[in-house]
Image (cartoon, rainbow, N blue to C red; front, side, top):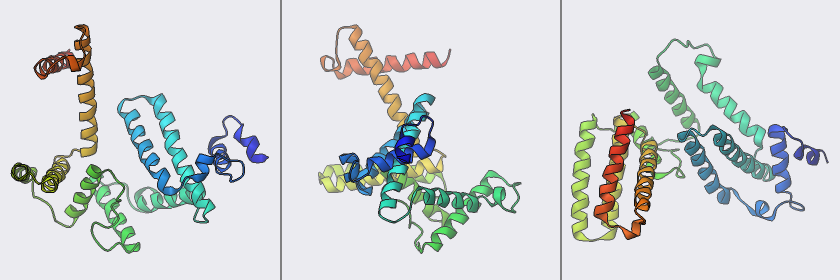
Length: 275
């Protein structure tokens, strides 16, 4: 009864959300869909919600961000509830684990170390602390612990960053650009051979090196690609709008016309940015 009262209490905060989650998972009275879920079936939703948070931030839609953060928080509550049912841990343990981690990783804030050091030094210290944590988890290899569930582009970036820490890296961005030219030529050669598996392999190699270039020039590849996607959507939407002014849809047009409109849209954007 106490939980039921809390469920219908406005401004009940995290305790209300936890009560709702327990009710949804109740084997006798809960929601059939929620009851049958597992860590594996919920994981894709967790990833999706994280990207929706990033999308709201990119669009600077702060009201929507509040809702998306709520959706992401609910994912944590869902996983923690399933873990509690399995006797593994609960949400308080999750919070305590994160609190302990943050305190341990910020000795310059919560310990005796001085805060008088550069951001670069703090980053090096952070990585050293994380390396010690990995050693405590018996992660022996340099690349151990880079999550398999990460988006491939982001995981490539993290793998390359790990390898670079132990000196396995190109000296400069120029060397990476040279490697991109090499991989591009290998892709052309693979296409000539018309073996799908080989073409896919060479294309993957090219993407992998492109991710490494982002690290060398200080660009996070996942963020850059999201921005490029957004730009493409915006510009193509404008092309569609210009076609509609002529009573056309894209399928009524041809490449030459749409390419001309695309160039016009780019000029519009340049003019707007210069005003």
